[in-house]
Image (cartoon, rainbow, N blue to C red):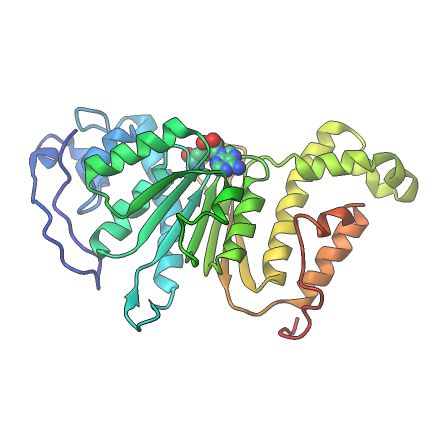
Length: 319
Ligand SMILES: C[S@@+](CC[C@H](N)C(=O)[O-])C[C@H]1O[C@@H](n2cnc3c(N)ncnc32)[C@H](O)[C@@H]1O
């Protein structure tokens, strides 16, 4: 593993004594040198197969790096917008991130390398159910000296009550977390009073299952049920509907939501990025729309499970 390049801290970052190891830099190809940011760890990029072992970028890795930077720019913006927080004693508190369905944790590692490393504060938690990936990420963090990263072998659901995580998490990310793991990540963020979310949902089967269950009844009730008469259409509609419901839910729970596309992710069918910033302004109109859409599609049962709204959220909101 090659040593990291010298660190160039972002504005406002604490200065750290990072060994100015040049051996990584010396072996980099010219285009790799141009693509890599000051202070970025060459060793990490090699571990993530973004850089080849001999310090080059190939066509595939060039695309990968572009994708990573593209996603990073949205997350960096979210993090920079967050006002500083203090702990119970009034001391500045570092930012906390929980990355759900972390997989090989490349998002967490890139975030740490580009943002948290030079800051000298803050902590990233990777939540993942596959023990071997958790173990591998732990070892990589140790090898890179990324000491404010913790990897937990937990499901998203379990992590909500785990003592290994702090009571508050600033940013919740979930990148292609399978099926309902994105919904669990939203519930986690609400429980942890998250100040922001960055979610790239994966396929979700739950809504399609519910749509299928009420198909006959709904076909008798509305011609719109033709939209999910065939199982394939139910799956596609279910996926779209799920993300619409998630956005309405976040708005109803006090977040301002933006939906955008992760361009450069052409290889993936799932390239919708949902960004949410906490405003505390619980939109009554969003809650009403959420209820209405669920009713329209015969999905009211989800109000008791996925999209539980406060009994009356009209008190602290205007539409
Ligand atoms: C498609 S991979 C995405 C990994 C990574 N976020 C990325 O984009 O490269 C989804 C990961 O989520 C994990 N996962 C699925 N359901 C989960 C759950 N309920 N809780 C935690 N991890 C979960 C899987 O084991 C898998 O590693």
